[in-house]
Length: 123
Image (cartoon, rainbow, N blue to C red; front, side, top):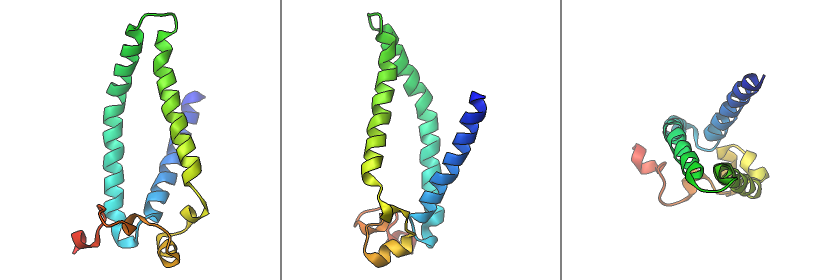
């Protein structure tokens, strides 16, 4: 049952993230945005297990009755910080398509001077 929930949740989350990525850039940059996001996802999948193993080994090597739970506490803290940051960052304007955000003068990925999505890099 847990595996079914895990796979189902991961599939739904993947689709939601891809929709968010596709909605956050203009149509002509969707391919590059998808490539960058998939590359970063693959990098995090490659780095995650060894890093988690190292943190777990470190916490297991500490003296004390509850030292093995330091890894859990560290992960829970990082997750909590991410959730709080996401809660305060997202507002209704984040749900608008890129063109609508640009028309209303809201910040977009391309609104900063130095980005990986600069128009000059595609000409």
